[in-house]
Image 1 (cartoon, rainbow, N blue to C red):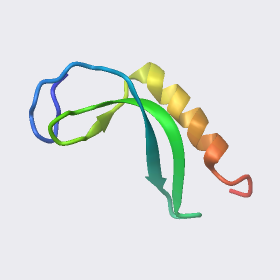
Image 2 (cartoon, rainbow, N blue to C red):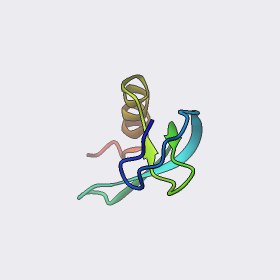
Image 3 (cartoon, rainbow, N blue to C red):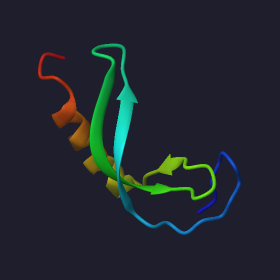
Length: 66
């Protein structure tokens, strides 16, 4: 895989990481997810199968009153 930020080629090795998503309400939502990370600039990436799991983890972490 090639990083779109720094251009470095890297192997897609899945790692579990604490992720943060900023929304307009309630603000920052934190949750764990499995992603790929560029070893040079630490940019994170996910493939289509990971995206479904990340979306589910986000939904669970997002307050129920949204």
